[in-house]
Length: 333
Image 1: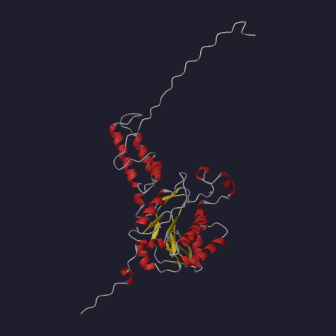
Image 2: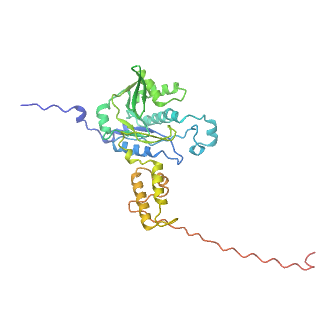
């Protein structure tokens, strides 16, 4: 009689559905000129939640960034004048230090059962098919700050020099005090991945041998508005580039078939088709953001309604009053 090979414990473990709240994820991001996070953040949030993780309410920052126009700020004018401008690539570090850490400290006070949290970039892209259950079965008992998601490891003379991309870092509850102390000691704003790389070199942060997350291809504010390529992210096809999307619709609208300034029936159908496709691809975005992206209200699943023409009422000019008759000499006294 042959004995069956026992199933590993981590494969037999049933993960409770609400357990993810004990290991929340906070996405580090900023607010655009439309006062909402960039589109890749909403896609990252949806994908991460679909994978079973619990994502904290998004808190976009509004720092005074060098070279960013004043319209991008939402802080009062007097605050902006007092706040020293920082570089865009230093904003993530400031966000983690001033927003994420206090935010998670409050969360731990409110939820004593919480074991730790994930610090993640707003463009987080989990490996395809990777779920919270997968992470919990293998790493649920981790007691060290662990770097799970990164782009690449750079070395100099055979030694660790720099880890690019702090896409996903797990911070146990017991390490919160230590980390807040290190943030307090770091007076100057630096790159966030440089901050955590230093902790890896010191042995205070553990680097996972394989990365479980990357980034969504996106227009990067840190990179000065350039597209940050990410070939290995399976979500890229779901996020058409913002300007490309708008230009594609605009080109259809301009290339009218019925002549200048008019749309033939054929051209109008083509426009509506493009808008419907765009709205479908951007369904993960809030309604107000989709309206901004599409240059108007996106069509619903039932089809878009024709625009309502505004009737402008022209008020008739009131007749001018006739000049008064000149007074008589007796009335001019």
